[in-house]
Image (cartoon, rainbow, N blue to C red; front, side, top):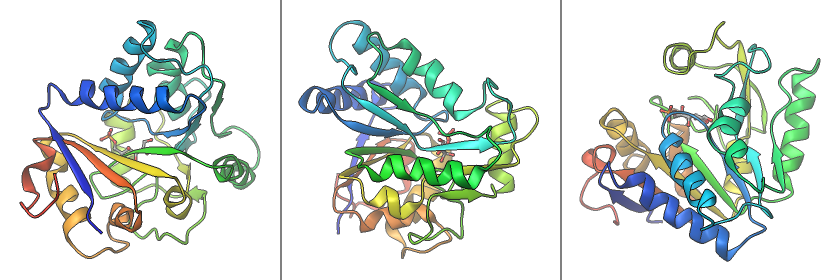
Length: 245
Ligand code: F6R
């Protein structure tokens, strides 16, 4: 199938994606959204929070499901995914979303926490937003992951651990993570892969234009019938002209 790739100027990317997302939420107020964290969606969440504050969109009936979480970080650590999504979006929404489902990374049984979070996602996801790891991961489905892998406790790749420490400020480094599995993500009605910056250009081209495989978990997204890539010109710079835009 052809993946739809929408390319925006870097300075227009966040507003363009926020407008589309706000439109989706207006059309489906009770939407169940799965959201990532990381640097890519930060400007999008900023733009979305501004639209909510201006009364252009309301999350009052929406449910937000967190995509993934680190293990080994203390509650309240600013690098934690639950904290980051609260800080950048959830806590800025007034009225708040109907529900915000974080992942219990602090309990005695992370496997049980993964199962419980999977059950939340299994109730249905209307739209999943994903970032793209520099190594091709989606969520914390690191290279080697396959669609049949469930929502689970994972080891995180050394490069992902470095990102958590150096870019996100995790201290100490995370010891692992919990992620929704690729198969669960593929059950969503719609998926948007968010990709910005020149540093992601090569891995985006690999994900979209070379055969699918576990070396690049994002490549499995092409199995989905309703997936779009929201890229900026820098991230899209190594895509062949054959990709639908
Ligand atoms: C975060 C997540 C990760 C990131 C990916 C890109 O919840 O699931 O897969 O989306 O590592 O991170 P950034 O956007 O910081 O480059």
